[in-house]
Length: 563
Image (cartoon, rainbow, N blue to C red; front, side):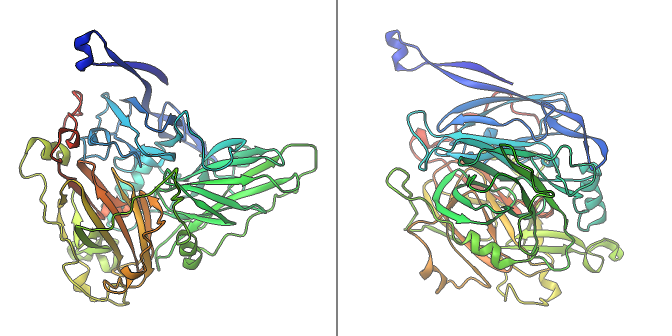
């Protein structure tokens, strides 16, 4: 899967007989269908290199790698490097029709992945249709070779990937949702490292097992790759100490239970300090929406201590919160703080040039003869500031770069077009229908942005994990209810806010983020609940070039997939 590629760069030094060469690690991703058995039956799933979950990429901070992606499947595909900022190089970012057109069956695309300030755990996944349900894997970013972790070095490190499994082919689930206009079928199981665990049929033999030695410390790199759900996670009789989120270090935070939203990564230290035995690690849904179906099952893996003993059977199971325990979720996420020390400083923008408030809503479109499966015969939709995003037929990045007209418009409102009690019950039906459009927001290079996500109770208020490509942002505030533009900023945390690329906006609440727009390009922003993205809860920022050449977009690669 991995090779080495040497790139020789000419420079002024070349004129005096010196040639600069740099070796980049090169990986091969082959996307293909592979048979896998889960829940007593076998089906073909999309995989990378035949693996589910896919291969883990190991890099150091500041590395650049090349990934040759071969599409040997029957579906179009793109690959996104979630949380990798790709400075000045959105060409390899991956979301279909935003920064590239899909890689067609039988085609290849060589993607350059540029790491910069990230350090910790990220992940990669398909960003086309719903292929990411099985096309995903971890990215482990070690400190630079002359650096170390800001915590005692663990004895071992293990990716823990939390996902979902459907008995039906995922494309059938996806197309049925589009056809009916209603919610998709819920998953049949959650998984830990691709396995449902002991509590599901035909699953005990292949349950993931984490073998530990008493007295040792383990770094668990936890990733929520689930399509539709936030998850609670815990290990029976053990505490977890959070040390990083989204590849950015945090002040140590010790909890028995964590909440992790789709798209997020959380690094925790696990001390094997209990009596030798078997203990369940477990994850189950956190779902705050009323009247929305969810998968009410629990996935498990087993933490097995080494040594000779008779294990408890069944192993102790952690007591996870009730499925709609909002206080358990927000109390955890609201306690995260950046490490913010001399070795890992932060730079929260103080003088803001661009203020935005984006309402994020689940909506509905009228359906002929009220024949769809949404509420009252409607077709479910979603929106940002009442605009339900429509994918263009060619990607926005190339349209922007080459000046192709008619692909997108730049009229996304900076503030809600209608001001009302966003979180009230029984809102008027005329507020539920959004406009359709391919609308984006343009930012000047180096502008400082404050963006408030405001959840609404249209159709179904719920948590929304909002993800921004190309950037990490500081989560300076959050709250329940409606954002108060005068009072709430007085309580913003500008000292040590967490630095993330995905933030779970609480049900009928808000979250405020800040970032500096210093990465030119086209950068997607969307809800990481997959049905909400499909329904239109997405948009993009276009960040213009700065004045110096080193603040301009880099040139596109020669093998961009055709549209």
